[in-house]
Length: 504
Image (spheres, rainbow, N blue to C red):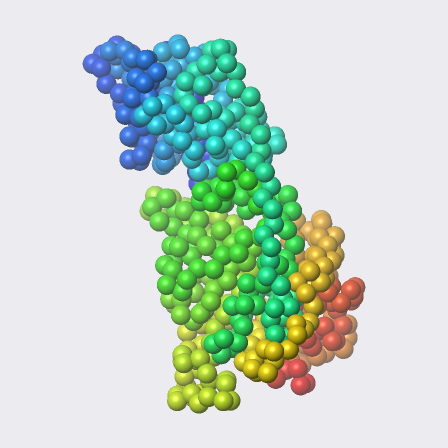
């Protein structure tokens, strides 16, 4: 007789069902594991055998064969331990077969039979709910998985608890969702002295999820401004929180099953590899751009990133997803992030500072910023110069609006966009609008269109640049509370894209 248990294999954020088949037959005693397992899965034989021995369950002197179906799907990770143990226990008639077949399980076994938490409990719960199965997982992973309301989740501390549960001796209670983590206290925009234009650009970027590049001398406040961006962004809604948490679950970043409503803010170092930024490695793990999904990717010293890394950003910025193609896997992750890039004007950093002389001006700046290709720069909606702050300004009292006031305006603008795109499919914010949808929501008035056409002709805007100006102008109009995109909105949007256009 063949006993069956069910688990999942991860392909990006998708959890594919895997059937674990176990047969105990007469023959030379052996424990065979087939079905394209990796090293961690193959080692499950020893962990399962020792865990059962610790429970005083001896394996019979027969041939034990475990097959992981479908056989052509690579199986990776230690979470196959628990389903293999369940299938074996069902084959030995220690626990009921029908109960095991109605369960999707995952978990790593210690040698003493205790269950170790594993990554991916949240997407596994989604897959279990789709198959109308109960999810069985380690106790410490149950709080995470229980956030999927449609799934029935049971968390167990050990394999012995699982056996007692299935034999009716001590049923396990359903797992409870972890706590919603409190929003972190953000840094206030009022801490930044001066830089009102950069603050305005930051607010526009936050309202419409537009990409922003800040160029300024060292110490002018670029990183300080970026660090205050989370304080003006609205918290994740329920759908966004689930999307983001599924990626973080695969990366093992969820803290004790708690769901974080704060938008991700990722700031990789400029020495990070392409696999770290885009994703990849042996298991095609999510990279920084996917971990920043629905949040912010801050790339300081932008031109210092390798050319290969920068060029790989072009397609994810445009499509909102990234495909990681490897010899043994083709995995797609969502990555709809807001890019905030910061750069010095040149290698030495003082090309635009009138009080210091750059020895190689202007070639120094052209060579340095030239590391960022034209096609990538064309995808950045807002570009703003961050000049040095005068020492006398540092002693002045805080100026401008606080983060709370800016956050209120951003939230109001996003509410307008949520209503606008309620029936627009995948589009959620102005940055997502394209084609006929963009024409219907962001067409400027006659004066605004005349200005935009004049700028496009004089400065040679690409079609992409033309549409990105329209999206930014739509966001500016939303912040202004205007139902129509007018000439002032277009003029401001153009001024953040082309130096000198605001004088037209």
